[in-house]
Image (tube, rainbow, N blue to C red; front, side, top):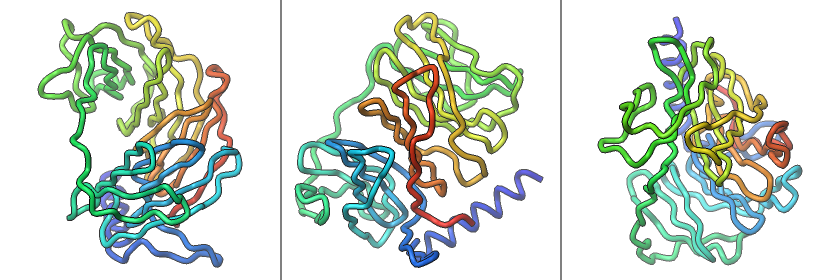
Length: 267
């Protein structure tokens, strides 16, 4: 039953992308599913369908659109450095954008910088579920594993620095996104079936990670998190058709949703 519903949902999402993700609801121009997000200098850069959106988040409780740049295919990731952004566009690869004027981002034609390895000892790895016990587990690894583990895999015991059981009694699906800002990790995850939450985990002692607090961020098969970043006491989550969810994490034990920015209609 669940597989059939998910298959129909995926078909609806494919149709949405194929039509360009330019939708109109109640007079508002909506761009598409939120796939990825980056935050810098009070602005959020959101991959939304076939568009890159630039949001003013100087006041995270009142996000507002500053500008956008449209592409012929889906924009799946974005990284920001200084006055430039590098986006990944399906069928075109990595493109460099000039974002010095956030209201008018433009493609530059410059070659993207060579990617740097982000793997480091003490890397955080999340295995959101195990089929054996239906247990949601958070792992801290001693180093990178090759090949990388997939969600649902259990790392070998000798590779584990520490672990925390986030939920021992829930049958979850494993959709998750992670951001690390030592000494904390921010995890957007499916705690219940199609019910997603933002958890704040203390990893100051890698051998004993601790879930400090969590809050709901959305419900529904189409609202699963794709990416998360944290900046200045807030976590920003690209939540597919749930758009951008901004969570106040200034009190790690009591995170709470501060605002939502809709980027797409619901299917």
